[in-house]
Length: 209
Image 1: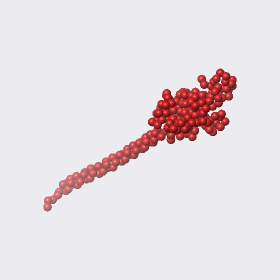
Image 2: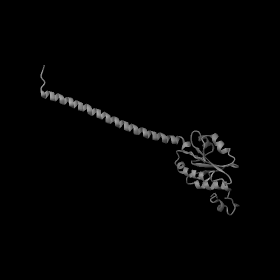
Image 3: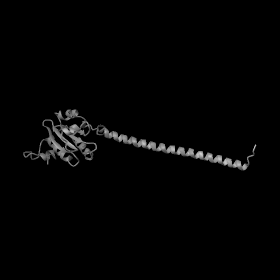
């Protein structure tokens, strides 16, 4: 049997230790990479989940725009039932698109207008008012075209006795004009030459400019 000198034994031991150290470093590197992958995967999932939630809110405007005093219409039949066949209330219809920046900017003002004429606050009004929204999508595009809506956001005002009486822009810039117009139909026309002298004092901003 050949003798192994202490020097050769020491060298062999060093090689073994170096190999073990390399293996240990590889294991640590694998663990670190695995942790980083898990971290980025988790964050990506969270971001994706948030994006999906945001898209869901856009895809489901009825949920996002749920208002007790505003009716959301998604078909021609619903429009006929809620607006055309309405014989007791004045109907204020807002045509809009969820991708329209002007529609988004004017939306809070339209909701404020609706709250001003809510059932709770209009018990003493001569005639009730209800508000309807019609989004532009594949189901309602034919309705927008049939009613010749020229731009968005746009509003129609229907009187139960006279039908369609007003067609107006309802962007943030013109919302107050819609308010004035609506007050006239609720309280009675007051922009005529023979209107009572105190019409504006009684009804406020009710003259259509």
